Image 1 (cartoon, rainbow, N blue to C red):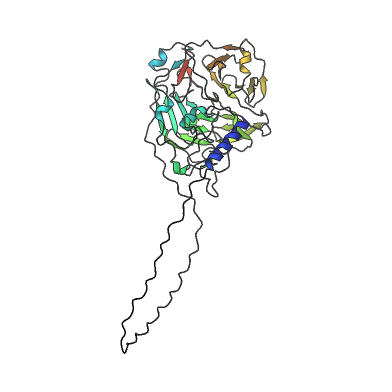
Image 2: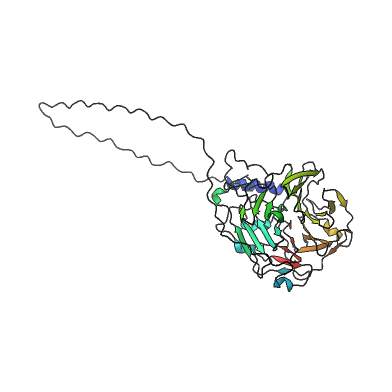
Length: 455
């Protein structure tokens, strides 16, 4: 479902899905009524002196059974969702070692990893949704990476009317032959409800993740920050009083140690307001703190602390709207933001969201004034920001940004670049420091790509 993500198109999409959902089911006709014909009495033979029949003792009318007072309708019990078959992640390799397939690669070459199409682990049965599990790539969704062991992760991705599956998929890049795993299956269809951050089994709803998916190394958890639930005609409404309905303040967290979703309140609730859509969401790779700012809410700029699981409003800075890719330079604590709802120039921020640099130079600098949900990473080994964007040629383009001079140049790529990623890169591009390169899944049916950036 490769459609442009604008306010008008989203409204047309919601109208279309609501129309589909309102198609009437065939009416059930009335049942046949069984009518018993009353039999005529048989004639009684005449007798000269009929013996009168004894008068029957009337049967007393039974006293009516009192109607019990109905109990309140309880919240429906969830249907047991499939329990994940243990698919434990392998122990990470020794630090400093790389698999043979990485060691054989030159730098800056696009390398498609064989047999790594996400479609290879498609769930059965397929959860509801208009565009199905391909939405995990195409429906405005990103990814995360656990640095230890180089584990690429996609979870609860899809959302809106596209896809309701909340499965967790992992690709262990440190293996000799990486293959996708399903760490947790999707919720049973009977548990899927509309307009709620959590389904009836208390597992999270699928959502457009944009850049909200982050991996918190210190907690060994994947987190999807403050994102709403499904909004799809035809899904059941939440039960009356359901606490997770019509809100977007909860975050979803998946425990890779226990291989299960946490309870809804494991991550502190987001205390602010505003529009979650393509919000700024970027993690500091060293502290695990997440910097987060929504659209249209007075420019409130927050930090979620991984150490004590708390939110702090740290400034009134912001952008309306954001719609950016972002990464943090861990040497200087600077954030590069690229993109916008319309073509917007890049900017360098400090951790409080203050603009500290706007003078980008070099022949490739105009390429960073862009829209379309680019992706940004910071490569710690080569000390460069790396920007990926969908290109005008139909293939992904890669740019290098110097962190202090802000000089921009095209990366010296070789090999065949992957096709543009439907509806944007977001944070689907992830830097893997143990492997010295970056990874991106750009297609549901195609292979995942890896690029080695340093030896």
